[in-house]
Image (cartoon, rainbow, N blue to C red; front, side):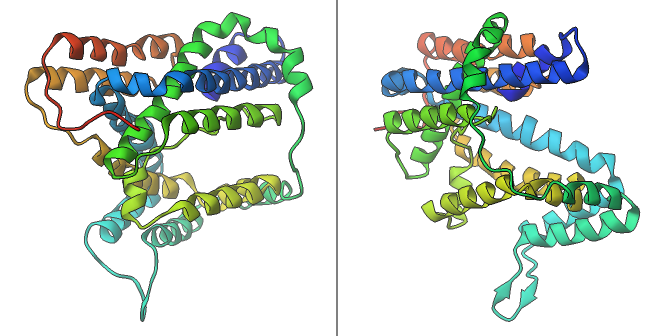
Length: 338
């Protein structure tokens, strides 16, 4: 939502870059609040939506997100710095697919940590990382803490009026993404309550916007992969606490200055491709292929270089639903969540 709502505001601004950024940030806050409100309202109809929307329309976009945003976009960072990027990609293959074990005794060094070590060493050895960047990031390491932005948010609520054609469709799409994750988790053996999840997601997003966050607290994809790795609720709690500490103390910028993007990209690429396993269904004919093609294409071409086109292409899952109703398609996956 931050990219979709802020980009058109910033580039259409007639003032200075600083004024354009401030306006885009305020619009992004309002848009994030509206997105949370949409999720809360649609929670009343979540179970009904899952009852009538085919499983492919909810699951295949996860694969589209994996291929486009978490796959191709990440691998471009490796191609931009091939000396570092190619070696980290190779190390991902060695760690996750060849069965090579690195460690001492019973301790096994995590594959992602191995890739980070290799990438950081090569990044500093080849000059990809710069000392000045680390110095600048180190100056940001201090207490920031939460800051109340609710007054400014409601004062500037009218700024989003000209961009509701982007905000509302993307807000609905964000809610649909949460439903995708619920279906994926159910097929992995973990049915979560639909209404409770959507309401919690929406309220959390609205609270975040009141404290200056343009990013929603959406349910993230990857439940089957996390479950295979042995992650449970404690994994999410640990993630939240780590992000809380790092963001409040400005540590994230320091880490990003030390670990280059050519190192992070392959980890995201190989880790996220495993999410596509949640879209496993049987193709029973050309109809299934068309449904999948439309939904994957909508995610692939939702790259934020053209917000208007991305919003239009988000209508493809709806078209898939219509095709499902009028064309007899037999899916192996169910699509109801209790």
